[in-house]
Length: 308
Image: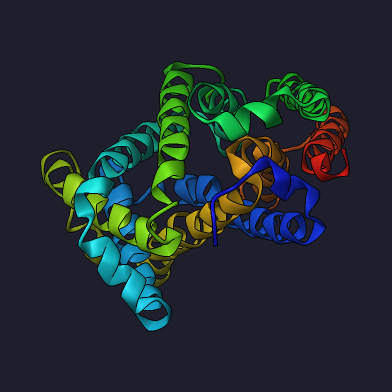
């Protein structure tokens, strides 16, 4: 499978496959914010990050060596290429998890959608093929509509957001910035290394980075003090959010590029808002629902670029 090219947007089959991967990633990434909030009472930031990545890494290596053994071995021979993205990913995880701890599942997701602006801006600067996408009228109009939807969700939340706007917002923004840098940087890596292998080794290296942090600032023994179902949720959140979500995202980037992928994920605040309502009792207002529809319409316009 080659890298993304503007001409791919005119291929209906490639676009459909890319959208399916985006939907899979969106579903997987709708859960971590909620799970982080649920697990907050039992695990600190560093402990959560450490064990979530262990769960993701074990799952990914099992899947990788079953289905793509040769590609996993090739990636192992090129670990130095994955060192920088691993550091960026670890920074993102710590900042973003801290932000979710201090705000709420929905608010952190809303702020996180700033990557819809940051990623295209970075892509525009470094990738010629993405410049053509960002300049498209459909992209610009769709992005504006989607961002209006996100703004509506923020303004329509009212005063029932736990924690409100505090220092946690800054941490979420830092986490979002680091993720955007990671997403753009990784595009050149997936041209030579399989996406599954990338996230497998990035997760493994991240564990090594988290280890001294959890020893110094966390509680590595805390998993022995909680029920089995809590540990299942902890490791499961890593498998779903870190493992499955990233694999789908990498494949989506190959089919539709980073800019379209980033705008499409403006849907996440809406889906997380629903999960937050069902699981965390975070309420949705009518304004949020209407604004969520705007986000859907904007994302549809962006992913409909192939028709132009």
